[in-house]
Image 1 (cartoon, rainbow, N blue to C red):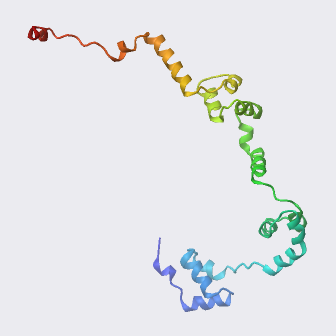
Image 2 (image 1 turned 45 degrees about the horizontal axis):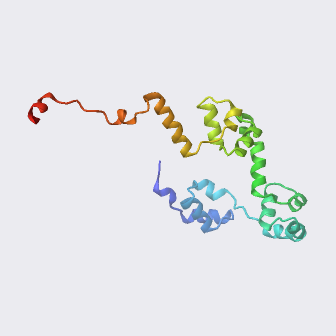
Image 3 (image 1 turned 45 degrees about the vertical axis):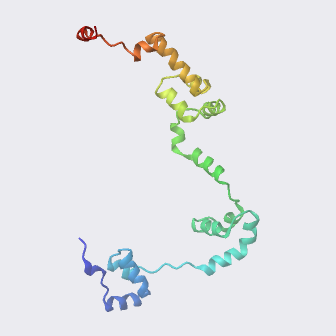
Length: 193
């Protein structure tokens, strides 16, 4: 349960933190902003980034890294992820499209893919989106090859098909469906005469 006194830091706790190498601002930030419990905030050491070490490594490998199109920030991130200095400097950056292609190949979804890459390319070549291909096969029960090769109807063609189907079902007289004759009321006939 929340206790407001957990956020109060006594002078003794400040002294204990100072003895452990934790400054006053860091202690306040840990307890009041991050919600750490006091024991952890007082005892966990501060992690420092060794900027001099990173600068020394960059001085040694920076020129080679820049020749390969690797910026300083990318080089540093690669080192933080455990790359060797040589590999971090010599491996060129890949563009975003290539990265996405690699991630898709490694994705577990690729194993569950419903349509082959060739079928999807064939559909795109014929101007059919993946979503259309998928709905044709799964919802409408089409053969995948026919779904990938049959072109999508334009709005005009869809209207023509709809009109043909309507005529086939209800006949050629549209007015008969929409404008039904009203029955004449026999009482009104008498009043009209």
